[in-house]
Structure formats: structure tokens, C-alpha cells
Image (cartoon, rainbow, N blue to C red; front, side, top):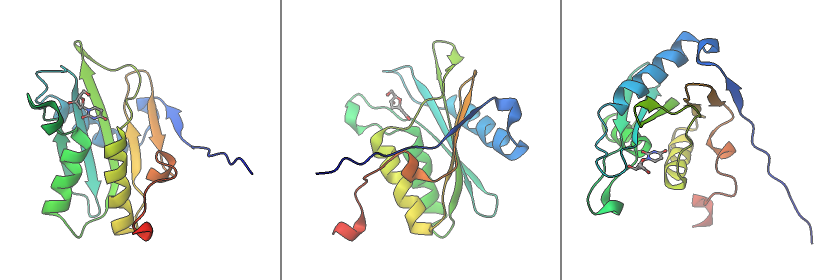
Length: 159
Ligand code: THU
């Protein structure tokens, strides 16, 4: 028997320490959170994906009275990217959440289903996605790929 350990690598920094490109992508995610449809949770999430070549596509969470029918911001953005720009890799994804009158102090992290979709997008295009998780007090940057957030993931090789 042996026990193995996974380690995740991420960086915490202030918004002001980021490059202009990263800050712009976060700003897009924040603007997009305003367009969330979140009458049940009142938790408004925005995601902005930077595609190869510079196009930015955005998505916000879209809830439904039949709760599981709703969709998170990340998947709204990534499925839109996949349907409109199927040949373009996603190079970066910024996420921001607004609740109780303010953006969250700490970065929010994507749910498991969104991580799975992010991972597949990355593998599909063989391009690591730089992930920017926004909080007003700190920004979490994951630049080692989605695997940092989803170890032991399901893989097409298993099929
Ligand atoms: N949500 C997202 O859109 N992204 C996340 O990363 C976490 C959660 C949404 C789903 C639901 O509409 C609301 O936030 C509360 O969970």
C-alpha cells in the first residue's frame, strides 16, 4: 500500500499587481456579473474567456426555478466559446462574483462541473488555461492548467 499526495500551485496577489491584459479580463468578468440572472441565489457570477487571437467571450450564471436547469457563468462562457469559435483555444478565464452589494472579498473557485468542462476545453485545444479568480482583497492566479484544480479527473483514455 502507498499513499500519494497531490499539491496544487497557485498565486495570490493584488489586482494592481496583475498585467493590463489580466486586469482587462477581470474587468470583463465583473461587468458580465451584472447581467447574471440569479433571482434565487442573488449570487451573480461573471466569467470572461480570452481566446487565441484576442477575442473575449463572456457568460454569467443563468438560474431557473427548476434549480438544476440553471447554468454557472463559467460553463455559459465556455459553451458559447465552443459553439461560436470551435477552433480557438481558450488561453485565460477570469471569474468574479457579486453578492450582498459587493464583489466577494475572497476569490470564488469554480464548481466541480465547471472544472470538468474547463479541463476538456484545455485538452481539446492542447493549451493550458490561465485562471484568474477575482476577489476585492486578493486575486488567485492558477497558471499551471486546470489540472491544478481537478486532480484525478475522468479522462477520455478511460473510455
Ligand atoms: N455559480 C457560478 O456561476 N459559478 C461558480 O463558480 C459558483 C456558482 C452560480 C451557480 C448559481 O447560480 C449561483 O452561483 C449560486 O451557487
